[in-house]
Image: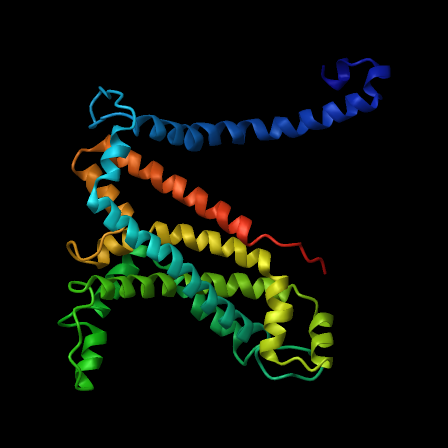
Length: 313
């Protein structure tokens, strides 16, 4: 009952106060959770259902069990795209996070020791953070178009520079699959490294200066300070960034679709899009379910492997 209708003896009881507190919190959460259930949870449930049907966009969707998944298991095109996506899943977070931590450390603690400061960033650190973060404000489609021109075989900036040095540039995007994979990996890392520079800089900036002063008094250099002090203290942030970047690597749809021509390179989201374009909605939805499961498994593995005792400071 509402408090104004509740007897005084019951209203002052500890159990009633506890229930009243949770009722107050639930009153604020019910509307957001309802929207989340309708617009987020419901589409996931529908996707799982349609993955077990032969739905082709019409009003009828016949239940076929695991037929779509069996078809996927024997589809060489799916495995080719999945191999590329898994390669990006391993390499893109590794390259991007290493670069992000290196730049963040240099901007936060890699400069010369200044008077009154145990650590300090390189000169111009605030400006560098803005420059590194700039790709985050650009559309993914714009990034793909610009980098497509950079890697263009005939008129690209990269091959033009190689030609001026007397070297014939390769067909980065339309020839060897490994070259196209390198190009996509480069663009992915360039696009997201600025975000992790800012993220890791914020985490490093929260580390008390006393800890750095103690390491400096013990004679620790920059490398030893990073691996023994900085990295353990920001490990939770690194693990979160690892998961986020892995999901971004799996979702490299726009970059590959816009930048890489034809069938030079396929990732699983592009393969899924082509099945939708061909009217194989049920089959495409089953591929989406596999991507969802792969993302969840990847996140659980990172959370499990990267789990360690939390360090308080």
